[in-house]
Amino acid sequence: KARDPYQPEFMQAVKEVMNSLWPFIEQNPRYAQQGLLYRLVEPERVIQFRISWVDDHGRVQINRGFRIQHSSAIGPFKGGMRFHPSVNLSILKFLAFEQTFKNALTTLPMGGGKGGSDFDPKGKSDGEVMRFCQALIIELHRHLGPDTDVPAGDIGVGGREIGFMAGMMKKLSNSAACVFTGKGITLGGSLIRPEATGYGTVYFAEEMLKRTRQSIAGLSVSVSGSGNVAQYAIEKCMQLGAKVVTVSDSHGVVVDPAGFNAEKLAALIELKNEKRGRVETYAKLFKLRYEAGKRPWHVPVDVALPCATQNELELEDARMLIKNGVRCVAEGANMPANLEAAAAFIDAKILYAPGKASNAGGVAVSGLEMAQNAQRLHWTREEVDSKLHAIMRHIHENCVDHGAHGDYVNYLHGANIAGFAKVADAMLHQGIY
Ligand code: NDP
Image (tube, rainbow, N blue to C red; front, side, top):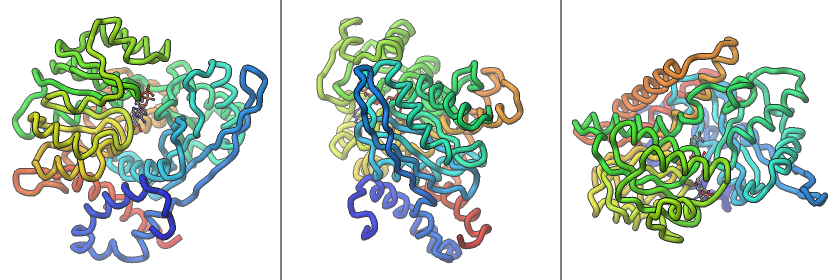
């Protein structure tokens, strides 16, 4: 705390992991050696830089860029780039810390990192976004490489932004090696990567329900957010016969008791991805109820999938969901439930999956994109989807192995312990540096 007094999100993430790990470390004292825990909470490298670019009016704009290279213990740094005005060191350090354990859970050899900028892509022209991405890479390129650090997308960074960054990276490095994942198909992207986080979250929820002899088919689901993760979580829920009754953005929530269908989802995707519009417009289009300034958690559902951002589900929201009979909560976003909300779900013995387990499908398929690029091969949709499904099942089993207490599985403990043990063992084997 003394070192990072102004980093609340980072402190929150560290506290959550340490709470889970403490009894495990007491039983396995080798993990208390060699300053391991102190090394683990200190990123290997933090890069901060100026991004200067010229807007459509010829004015010079300045943004701040970051890359947190948290841990390379089990492979090259790997984690997304976030473009959002709220981006700061605390948020990126929390995300990079979480990413390290998540990547360990995927079974693929990837270390943890995260980066981004306080740049706001909303309202910017394609030309402005391109010039910004190019300016960012002019600085960041020297820190990236296919065996060093391989970024991907996150909030505000989708296929368009990845394309601009990967293009400039190729030019500066004179190499077509895989330095970004989440690329478009024509430039080496993997099928199913856009779908992977949302699909993986629903696969994980399905596994949790199955283990308690329940099926997701026929259940009602609330989804928050309307971006990449939310869109494909909605699609997979529909495919599995569940009814999604909410969708939201940073301005409000749409409540739709009849549930999503293919036509509504196509309209939402076009509105958000092409027109970069708001869910309020989507509500008007289909004459649905829109609640300005609200989140989805007051709507009674069987399953809740928070897919927007950190700390979007607080204690009061958790209590409301529990009171209304929620059975399962699987996080598509990173740390959407705060510490108190997560504890409330666990106390009430609700099936609750932390993002580092349930949203790991995105980075897992990023790992598969790296593998395909290295092999110079392109796998089919079915191949990638079946690998994603197998990885999500494996993560689920791993969480059960480390988190089962009698009949109830504490997935938060399970995920933290399983991810930590892999990273910690790798660190111990490599000595002190
Ligand atoms: P997008 O930018 O595609 O979508 C983000 C969504 O969340 C938008 O609907 C946005 O609303 C909403 N949102 C963003 N910030 C806030 C806020 N402060 N309050 C309320 N709503 C907000 O991002 P992704 O879907 O890619 O990411 C969503 C979450 O999933 C993040 O936590 C990310 O870290 C996590 N994640 C993403 C992965 C991926 O593969 N993309 C992988 C693993 C985790 P609006 O349109 O109004 O901005």
